[in-house]
Length: 339
Image 1 (cartoon, rainbow, N blue to C red):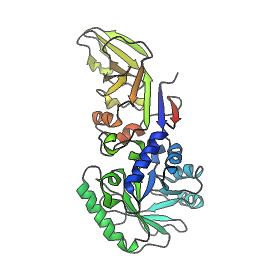
Image 2: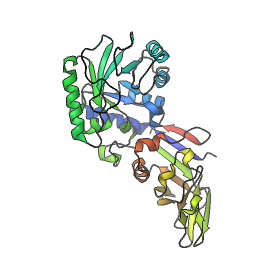
Image 3: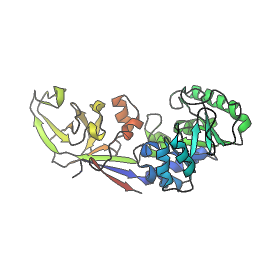
Image 4: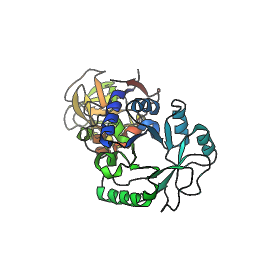
């Protein structure tokens, strides 16, 4: 029996894509499917959103782009990370489009010039002239989810710096900007986190009409009663103050249930219960309100258990929660549905 099961609902992905297409109006939806579609499966997600109006895929590396090209022969694929050496030749042969942050640009391959308007990472400080291979101009917004005023200043700088190249495809918006900053949408928006039904603002995804697409389930592998004064887990971080029933779930930080998620809540048999003690490599403990049978279902994500909630407990972001889940068949069973 698998330690846990991941279910990817492509129907939810489709509905999120439709939501973004509606929000964007006439701007194109470019689906960001890097990091194996944020842990949801890049090829599966790409096929789903293509049917709902997405017109391009964005990835981080040439290798990711090649994986998609093998399945999607004619769709525009933009590599957003830096490329060099043999990667450029492979991208050229596969007709991938590359992001370039400094000139001269590689020859005989379509490129997108990136302007640094405030992210302070990759990008040109200014654009004097766009080489002939350039098909797009882009920037990366640093604070669309947290500081819209700074994001608007970035958008204004990008608009000013690219105005004479409006015949090229211009793109700046991420999910947060696509949802909340209409002026950022330009010709296309690169949307990732929202496609998966995760909030770019760390709030309830439903606030923006989004539906989580990933469900993560396990079970109670053991149920036991701790007497007052007994503990569970490394370091005795949880010591029972009274007789307490606990359940042991065969999922831990090796599966992606982070060590700093002690104190978060999961569903056990349909009821919210706290994770107690130290998260181990291969197990967590949950406090129960009474004895439950072994194999009682445990929902780690889904049914209202949100990645955003786990992220707040861990002091991180929902991106890291879902990207960190281990989906190899030696640890979990992965199922794709289209409901």
